[in-house]
Length: 317
Image 1: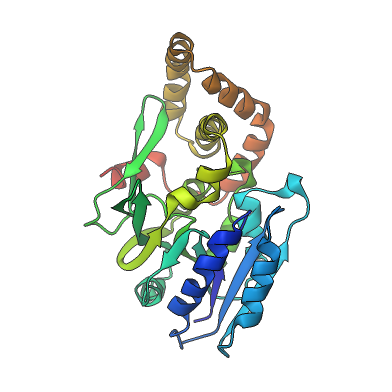
Image 2: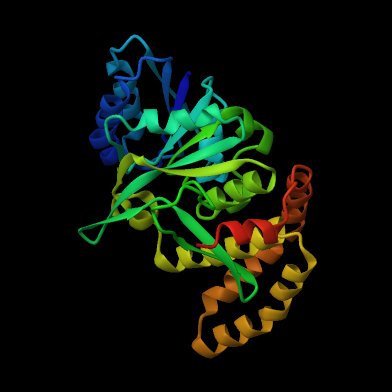
C-alpha cells in the first residue's frame, strides 16, 4: 500500500526544522509500499520554502520521496485549499494528514493501515497526545449531539472505536473516497470545522470513520499557526461563521432545520445582552456566503444515504 503524507505549512519554519526529521524517522521503517511526503506551502513570509527544499534534498531512503507546491496567491490560502493542493500531487492509496506541529510516534502507521482492509472505511484518527498549558491530554475520538439548533461536538471517551470525525491534523484517509467526496471544503477557510464537515459527509454517504488508540502522535497545539498567528476575536468570528455554514450545508432533516431557525432569536438576544458582537459578525459572514453554501449543499447531498438522526444517535457518547 502506497502512502502520501500531507503536511500543510504556513509560516512554520521553526516547526518544520524541528519536526520534519521526526516525521521521516517515524516513516522510514515502513516497507510495504512507497511513501511520498508532500508539503504544500501557503504564502509564507519566513524561510519555510528553503527549509522545505533542504529537507526534501536530505531524504536518503529509496522508498521515500519529497514533494512540495507553493501557493503565491494570498486569496487562495487557508487550510482546506492548502491541503487539497497537496492532495492533487498525491499518488498514494492512503493520505496521511499531519499538521506541522504534530509528531508521529514510531509504529503509528501499521495500526492505521490495517483498517483499510474494510472497503467502507474512509478515515482513521490517531491517539493525540495533546500538549496544552504544559500538560498532556489524550484526545482523538469525537462525539456530538444536536443541541439548541446546532451540532455541538466534544471529545469522546477513548474506549470506543467509532468517532464522529477524524482530525485533519492527524489522520489517515482513503484517497479514492476523498476524491469522491471532493476533499476539504474551502468554504471553511482559513480554518476550523473543515475536518468535521468532511467526516460528517463521509458518514452520511455510507462510509465509516474510526478512532485507533494504538496509533499515537504528539500534538503541540500551542505552537501551531492558529494559536500563534491569529487574534482571538478573528478565530472566534470564523468559528461562529463555520458553525452556521456546517448546519446550512449538511443538515437535511426538516425538524432539525426548524429547530435551528427557532433557536436563532435566543442566540441573537444572548449575544446582544452579553455584548458578543463577534457573534453577529460571524453570522453576517455566513449569510453573505449563503448562495455558495447552498451550492455546496446540493453537491454533497448527491452522495447522502443516511439521516442526520441516525448519525447523531450513533455518535453521541
